[in-house]
Length: 211
Image 1 (tube, rainbow, N blue to C red):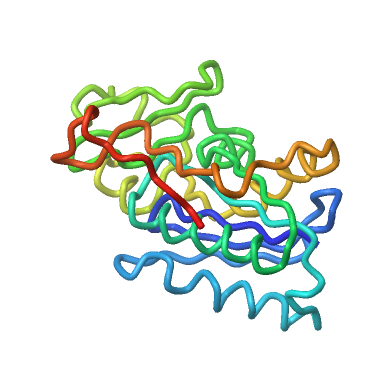
Image 2 (image 1 turned 180 degrees about the vertical axis):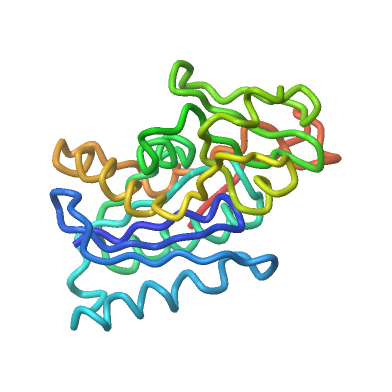
């Protein structure tokens, strides 16, 4: 069994899948604060509902961002703690890749990159682009997109779908990596921030250490 989670935005999700990536159970919710506090209780609830325990887990997968600094730190710390404590492999999946996998009809995935910018990942370009709010055209706002609920409301994205299926998609994408023996290094795996936090210069960023 694979445990998967995505905490790149206020719209968070967790999932259980079998080793082929087939979804067994999932849960999604939105939170304005306390990001990450519900991740472990929700995971344990899914396991309990299936009559399973953490001892049944054979792999852990996590969305890596970009997105919320706090959400990503908490989510990946939990995922790495579970992988380490259970002695199972871990795989990280870029969150926007998972969001597009979850909503196949969406042209792009957007996540907040600050007060007035987004990271936008289109299907044609695997590298997210930093886009100011005022550079998003009316036509783009009317396009089918994946975006967190609060961002969709702020930008008036008429056709946006929330990333509620993100964790299930993380599990699907991770399953192929597990099958190929291509898990990530537990100690080296980090969130994909793409840029340092506000007020921190690139040159002064210290290495992030995990476990």
